[in-house]
Image (cartoon, rainbow, N blue to C red; front, top):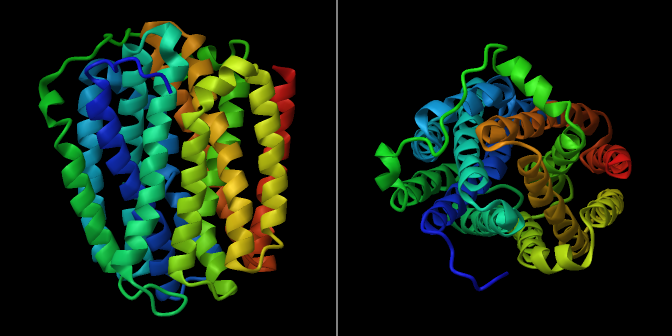
Length: 388
């Protein structure tokens, strides 16, 4: 990435983003392990994972509207505080019902962080530097995604195929979010960078009008497919590991490998963008990701699975920052928070629907069948790339 100096708001945002993303990658795998400890079957694991995205699907567009009134900086703070409380709630979630409620709350808290952070980049970064700043932002997320599973597996320990203490990992989430508040808490009195426009049509109609513009719906669908695959991997790799007698340490390492190679892809995204078109990058990265998902279904040793995930992490990492950039480039500054939220709503809709379907598939055919389903989802998004 370029050595050019970052704008003043960027460093605190990137540091906070790294820590909140690490938190969510501590929580999500451990929620699956806690569900298994509570004797959840594969379908119930999928349902709990789906509930993570339920409220974000309902409220994502409204959040985009509120950013223009409250300010993107406050959203980052509110989301981080909410994530701290939900991490604490997960410690005491000793039934599937309370676990599901806490999981849903964690999804809403994470959405607030994402809407605030992505809106900040979209509104404050120079238009000609979108690829660079969104690359940095998603890179910071990947750092968190890499560190979270590693630290969580160490803190939680291992009793063979299950952790010794998922509660220790949830407590780690509380600590990480407290630290994440430190660099951004001074933003608590900041006003919105761009005041949201009052739209007589209403938020939903305004969003529908927005996504009808050429290229935006395709970008949202591609983003939905990629984010759903990444989300399902976080949730179902622990289940796949227990079926194949992988230790939590091995699963933590594999999740970290996925995040690490995603981070590598974003580190080199600027150079790749200079050499290849957005169409070429989205096309080939999606094809490679599809093939990797098929291969995962037949990987029955940690080393084999880790090698496949190594490649998949790189290819999956290319698409997200490109779709963020595409959506931002095709909208005016006053519309950008809503556009970011529409894209995130698409992501969360996929993360609501796909895990529930994956859970049903895993219950019928085993966790390995989930990867075939993910390959099919990615394959459908290839056609969106082709048309645009």
